[in-house]
Amino acid sequence: MRVLADNNGDGRGEEFYLDITVVPTRPDDGTARGVVVHAMQVTDVASARQPAEAQATAFEQHYQPALDVVMALQRNLLPARLPVLPGLGIAAYYLVAEREQGAGGDWFDAVPLGDGRVGLVVGDVVGSGPRASAVMGQLRAVLMELLLQGSELPEVLARLDRFVTRVPGAAASTVCLAVLDPADGRLDYASCGHPPPLVLAARGQARYLPVGGGGPLGVTATTAPVPVQSVWLQAGDMVLLYTDGLVERPDRPLQQGMDQLRVVVEDLRTCDTQPTIAAAATDRVCELTAERMTRDGHTDDVTLLAVGWTGTRPQQFHADLPAFPGALATLRPRLDDWLNALGGSNEDTLAIQLAVLEAVSNVLEHAYRDDTGSVRVEGLLDRAGRACMTITDTGRWTHPSPHPGNRGRGFALIRGSMDIVEIDSTETGTTVLMDRELSRRPTVGLDRPSPPGTAASGEAGFRVEIIDYSPPHMAVHGPIDLSTAAELNQHLRETSRGGLLPLTVDLTSVSHLASAGVQLLHLLAEQMAADGHRLWLIAPTGTASHQVLTLTALNQLADVVEALPTTARSSPR
Image (cartoon, rainbow, N blue to C red; front, side, top):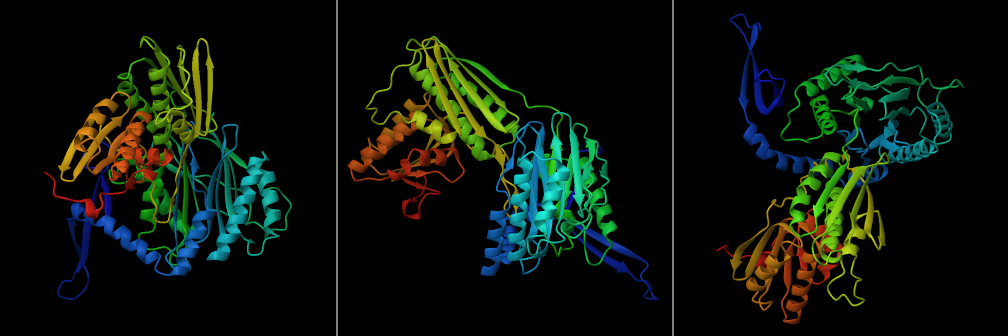
């Protein structure tokens, strides 16, 4: 059992695992008069066992091909991404039922409405298996379209109710629908036969919101609109929407499950130090709530959607840098901290880092011939959830060569990393505008999204480590950009004897791979290929280097692998 305990009385929870045995004590007459409890701390063992247990659970849940098909259908019908919006933290968690039918009709959604507000949905279709999943997909698509049209909640629910009556198998579906405005914390909500939302206050108290008399969809003959109610959240409050699979069990009253849920989430807020699970508060609440509420098993799907309101907007990014390569080392950690604070996925963070640092590198290389200028980098998260970056200089760019050879990949990297890229170049300087919509991955089944800031595993400083000389094998750590490209080039040439020897380069710990580094690797791969050798690049999926190698098609010249191939291994020296 995972336990959180306030050992020091300071309100911060310490996490550990216990094996607990309870044995009744029986005096001479055989009557149980008490119990003996024996608890042994097994934190180290449990932590070491978790990866194996997770894999075993995955195999158990997917042991039948039919179940694989159902789960694949469920994943494709549920949202693949959740928006990242100013002033809000959003997380979702879906856990399949413990039965052979697999996924069912639960769904969740978080829909940006374009004006800064977000629509929040948790629903449940009666039944299980592929049919329930298919009905769920139809209801989710229709509800999303109604929200995006800008209709008011009563109209949205009335039209959804009419739609349900025309879809076989959709009758008696339940839904809880809410709209949250991060400008003032106003939450408008309505429930159609669904459990009430739970609000967890910043100080730890939890309360259920009152819901009106709206019944399940498609079964009531009344034409009266579903009652919509409003509350104003306080800064730090969190709203939890969920399906009845979280609180309902065949062997206990529903109210008992509701009471247990309220107590569980209150305990989670007071003990907020969880070192082995997700870092964001909404992710922690979703994951631990599902874990604790399903310890005794669950016969229905479990779905949670948690939304926290911070009451503040994220700070804008601003940096004025001198135009010399060493400025990149100053910019990189500041940009990394700001992007991680926004809460986007690792993929988003890596892409924006790459684009911004590449754009700044272009300024340093092309805008100022005498290295006496400056460059300004600005960024903000707009209300639609887009990271908007602006790079400005006052120099005069040199015109690119029509035959760049192995150069000219910088803007290709930028455009491949961002959704929108605009360049405005005049006699007084150049401005590069770049946008990328931020998102986060929900937890569906056994998939757990990586916490922000973990994808780039490189160290802050640049260094090259020679692992072996026969055959040559080297590992690169930190950033590869204008300021470090010359040093890397020297190591590459020396280790490969000018490209005459096969070479393996481990890029796992590279925190940033700029076009200057891509150029070096392209030249080396081409030269080695001409000499009959092959360049091996180790770049695991999810790292900064893997994304760049794919964008620049370097994987067509070199062998890009997840780990060092067995045939290339040798004893380190």
